[in-house]
Amino acid sequence: MSAIFQPDSLRQSLRALAKGDALSRDGLAYQGYYGLGIAGCEARLGLFEAAGFQLVAQLWSPPRPRGTLILLHGYYDHMGLYRHVIEWALGQGLAVLGCDLPGHGLSSGERASIRDFAHYQAMLDGLLAEASANGLPKPWHLLGQSTGGAIAVDHLLNNAGSPVDGHTILLAPLVRPRAWGWSQLSYHALRPFVGSIARRFSENTNDPTFLPFLEADPLQPRRLPTAWVGALAKWVRHIERSPASTRSPLIVQGEQDMTVDWRHNLAVLERKFAGPQLLRLPGARHHLANELPELRREYFDYLAPYLA
Image 1 (cartoon, rainbow, N blue to C red):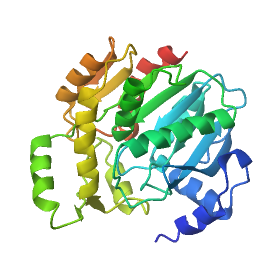
Image 2 (cartoon, rainbow, N blue to C red):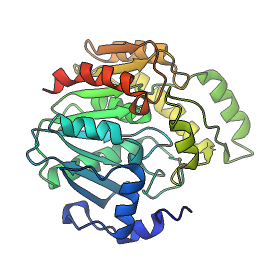
Image 3 (spheres, rainbow, N blue to C red):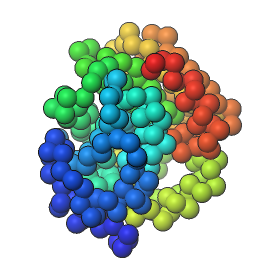
Image 4 (cartoon, helix red, strand yellow):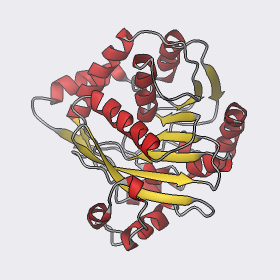
């Protein structure tokens, strides 16, 4: 494990997020490694439990927040990769709350795996409870990248009484991945024999520095568990059966996305939501949270008036 910070030691030093403890030496080293020590705001790092997992949550708050952004990261990701989104939201006067998904980053669980996507919903319920326990101001906005977008979509479609009373932002949301038919065939062929396959890192942004950073990141999973693919297959059927919603999420989608089946996904979201607002970026790839600065600026400028 990287000597830059020690994840196991950091986890052991954490208490409940609401405690507001000063960051340990490992916590400061973690924030420094990922650029999360953002000036001019209060920052907390702590734990909560949901669905049998110990989940590591982070909170950033400007001096007088006028609302809150609940942030959900993508598959293989963790909160350490979302500095650009966090800084933008703080610049909009919003507090930011997020956590590492089960099996990701600093949270507990089999790496990059899940038995049922319902566990992600329990995690989000717990995260929203943390927002309430920490007195975070409303409106509460929800932003999800890729699998984080899938979690947000499921929440909106199946929780009429959701406490999320602001906007929902979906960055390259997952409904099904690219080449989904082949993925399912491979899953059924491999499942009896292997529990995981080696992960293939890919160029999923136009930023030439992002892929080398990922490959060196000590919190990156190195395997793709077949259990996660099976859970995704069940979740896709669940979403297709879910009732439509009167909500109107804001969707940002790159047209060079080679990770999700974005044309199919947009068609599904058009059916499930009432007039979702869509920004298509012809040159952008999948990981919009870490795209080139000019592409981030384009979609941030598009989103900002909705949050004003």
